[in-house]
Length: 131
Image 1 (cartoon, rainbow, N blue to C red):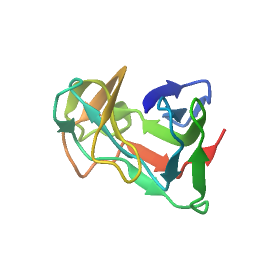
Image 2 (cartoon, rainbow, N blue to C red):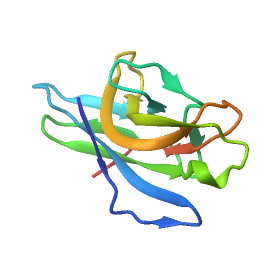
Image 3 (cartoon, rainbow, N blue to C red):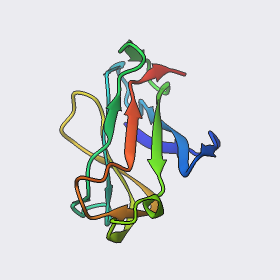
Image 4 (cartoon, one colour):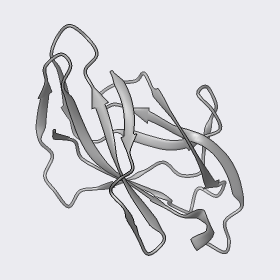
């Protein structure tokens, strides 16, 4: 799997909407079923900062079968840390992503401000759909 972001989704009211894209870089088909685990992290091998992404279950989960070279997408919402007066801002180097039903993570470099408090939820992720 290869992970990337498409941030052309825009933003509203202090949030930025991005497409989290997972591409099957292998030689065999693979399946995306459900939600990725996503958190802000200090680096590719760093520990998570703050709360992980909350699942947006407003749309049903679909079984997305990816042929080699094909991709699936999920909407990732990042809420600006500055929206929370009680946030202790911590620089994050990007996102750690766990594909659905996988224990190996991927890293996407995308500097953001994180909140070190786990009670403040900056990230929301939708279920994957086909592209």
